[in-house]
Image (cartoon, rainbow, N blue to C red; front, side, top):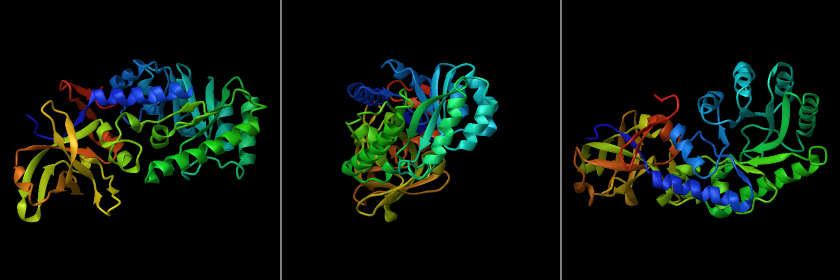
Length: 368
């Protein structure tokens, strides 16, 4: 009997999402290096191998270390932390490690202290504005980094330019997502053209779930690194990169109170479970999750109209439910909430329960 929130995982949907992205990469003749920060599970990672994937992306050295037990080709798509050079050297001694640099200072430090060969990606800001070098404005910095790489070919192998179009999450239609994709790939291809003569093996790596889900034209791109697509979520459905039917995780929560006068029900499922991500619909409604129907096999179905999580505190979730439907819910009932951002919900919950058989899956570092 369920007494507390549980994060359900639909393996069938996950595998279908993987198959779709693998097929897209195959049709475009590019490498899929999926980002594992969304699921952070050794077992879920193995599902990719069923589709021929042997390389992966992570967002931290700690994550790379944990996955290195089973994966030997890992890119850490996060600016290299020079304070963690011992971890970098330890990993590079065992696996094919790729790291990201966005300054000559970092590259110069790596030149002096690396003890094993490491693949170097230069981080490019393609419009997100979070980190990375801007082509043109930072051309001199890029040239200095490349000069350092040329001088240390035995330890630092230049692999190419890497970008993340995170601003695609601000889009609100497939057309807007495609526009971000075109601008990103155009910028990256122009950059490649400037350096290809001197670096004929130079590659381009891009990656975010919205553009990788919607776009079809990946000419001259070598690698994509989406991550959220394995689960998707309400945010992805709203911006047009997926459908609600593709969402592969859901939070199942006990109802602990019902307030008909306020048209509200209270669940055990708060910010420590769903996280605090929210979205605002085109109609101006802000919510932290949506209520879905429940199927007899334990899975979930359609979103229920006008039923949404209106507020969160630490353990409480408050749902708005129409007055004409609130009599359907009683304390002790169990309901299903689809998350706004599956990455953060999975991080908050720390484990999964498979819909198909009730089996428990831990995330790395969470009991596994």
